[in-house]
Image (cartoon, rainbow, N blue to C red; front, side, top):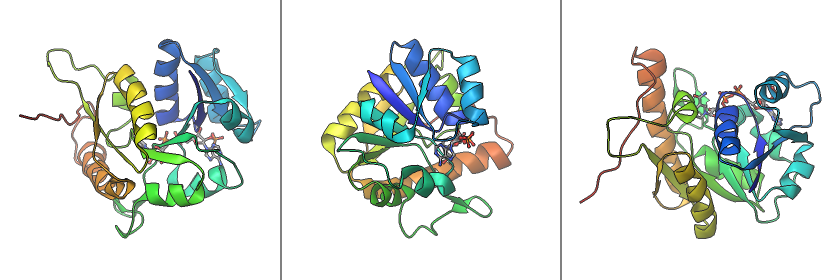
Length: 209
Ligand SMILES: NC(=O)c1ccc[n+]([C@@H]2O[C@H](COP(=O)([O-])OP(=O)(O)OC[C@H]3O[C@@H](n4cnc5c(N)ncnc54)[C@H](OP(=O)(O)O)[C@@H]3O)[C@@H](O)[C@H]2O)c1
């Protein structure tokens, strides 16, 4: 599958690199020919190609957004998605690791407003990128849970296939408005790992009976 990545920093590169190793074609979407992160990504994985954002989106079957939350407007505005799935990996983080939109709405709902012709799926936000580089937890017979949210069933199904390929258990939590709660779960993870002295190689599991 051809997959476009808007953003190939910590998160984007980890996911794109593992998807490429699984046999997918990765096209990095960036309008800045001098981008340091793109240069670094190509050095580490020469199988990636780079295109202007609109061109990359046009040829991809699914698009990942892994930009700093504040860059989302610049990254999305003016581009057409023509009904494609847009996997939103971004998190609005405010001062003191608070919710960047004061918990009034989710960042993913804003992403949907910025890209109204995309089918936004919130995913790959509830852990640090370390767990996207390596999702394996040997010794456990459950996979790390990847909680997702979105308003379009077919887009969630499409994203879930890639989530499972990357070694996670995809769990649909419901409509895109649920992304607000996922963003709070992210803040918990970030506070524990980035401020609370907890090591970053930990994940949540989904157990059901
Ligand atoms: N870090 C984590 O552990 C983690 C985990 C889960 C989710 N997240 C979320 O994921 C997002 C990315 O985090 P990160 O740590 O991967 O950030 P990062 O390392 O700073 O990478 C950001 C990427 O976005 C690109 N970018 C910025 N503005 C752009 C634009 N207008 N058009 C196209 N590309 C643009 C950058 O390219 P240039 O180099 O050209 O600027 C870079 O490739 C954030 O929203 C973060 O909250 C982070």
